[in-house]
Length: 591
Ligand code: FES
Ligand code: MG
Image 1 (spheres, rainbow, N blue to C red):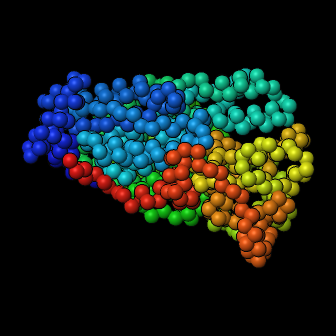
Image 2: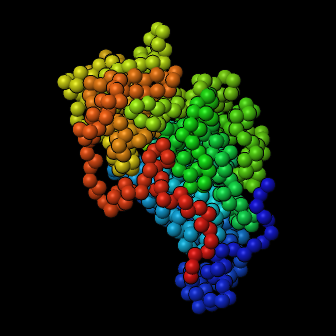
Image 3: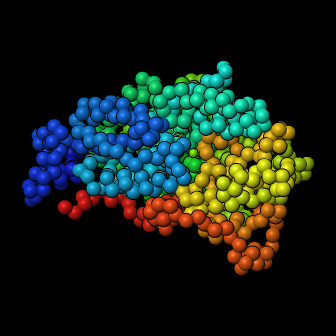
């Protein structure tokens, strides 16, 4: 079932073809004509399609879109539309300080205003680097003009000394080896460079590949779009087809509100588990759902996601990288498995105008080494575990990256499987962690749980990717490569750490993590999904009255201050809370 197919009046005609305001139409027309467009084009009822350009020199992960936009334009023109390309605020994950997460909501606001305030009948959302995908989908959900995602695609697979090296993941692995004295700094940089061999976004199943895969799982991009490497010829072909398709979507009046339904969101949660997707998918998908007006509960991750097996053998949960994943069949092949197993809804509508089940017809995996059958997974129950306790109401743990070593060391005590108790060592910031992790007076050993706070949306601000704290160098040299970690921040989607993270409420919002002290004992029970400090309610009360919660640093820019005034917690998507009431604002703005 798609939208209507008969020709309807386009919103762009209210700018260019308003018989009651020829003065305004002339004003709009003359300036678009000054780069060569003609009044015949602009007044003929052809759909005007925006290309939201996310690529630039300060967003290298998305830079391929500068080239791809030419093929998008060709597709739009060939299908009878008029392309108008415009820039969106960059969100370059690796480089933006203090964090690109601060800019997701800013870029969202900017894109909403562009889609609402300019004569656009539809939009192609160019996505890639982590936040560029959720921010685009959040804006498309708010405005609700026909919209389609075009991913830029991952980099080619990285190789170093005959071994695959994936972006991000190689950094976390190499910094452990550097600290243990196994490699030097030149070797570290050489490995990092080899992980990034071409244009494109991260080639691991980090946040970028996860979110582009989930855009596809949501039905918001053409089938197969999520994982085609940026450098492949198929990427340019996908750009052309995406351009053609968005014009048809205008004719069909097929909008995000018909696609971003509760069924689509749950499909994405399930698919994320099978992909071994990033922990950042949790706040991003919640944000998309909330802007789309879809009810989503923190428990949905446990109820719908946790029991799903890991099918994609892609780093950091597995071995391979994006290029091989694409050649194995990519997202459609994973979803084909999930559909055969009956764990996703095949009747969800997609941008093709067809339902998901029709799109997946015949898309079985081509390489079973990379994409496993549902009944022969890499791991059973590979989704996010949702935890709560007296330190926070909500946190998640990515169980697909629990290594055998971590399981043996911390989760396999006879009679107490899945339970670990340890002494907390608490850091108030990433700076303090880096300054003090090797301080022998902290007495960090195998019985320590590392805790970081002040890293949530208010504390950082934007929320920092710091919870995957590595142990002190002395422990690394003994072969102890990870300790249990807890925090109110996030961690990179490329990290292989099974941290307890995204804890909400954060310490800066009055969460009890702010009252924890080094030396307190913490018990984590994965059987009951509890994480508790072994402190009485009275002790929490007493510490609260003492007012010992760590201070929140000053905002350094106007947006940081505004962000802090408007943002919610990671559990709730860290959205601008007052923005979620604006939905389907597609109406023509006042002249
Ligand atoms: Fe941009 Fe990973 S840093 S995709
Ligand atoms: Mg990141």
